[in-house]
Length: 173
Image (cartoon, rainbow, N blue to C red; front, side):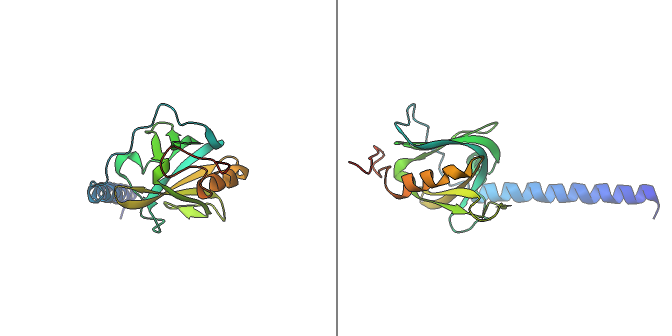
């Protein structure tokens, strides 16, 4: 084969690979189309329950399936983000993608994980929030710039400083 033929072959293979990826993403979105729209972010989250985090929104997966990424409702789009936790729930404000609001009553737990949605960062590198939406348990991952703040989030969510009625309570109440 001549050099121009090899270059053309490479271009054709590259285009076919990109079409395969695009087709797979669309098929995944079709299979997940029954997942309801995300809840609207309330105008006021209430009193902060943990420090604000800046970092990277990694993605959302089906719970216990760390590579089964959810792609509908822009949940599959990684983006720089800021995460806030208030009495009403958690908000992840992503740059260039929609805001994700997780109501307090939907939050099930928080933990640290080494990987999620194809992103592997090492032990305790990701804050993962498990929540219920549309009858499915989901895991949402966030990689903060300051990982020393993770315990505050884990404690606030797991020790019920956020109540399941969405109104919020503190451990003192």
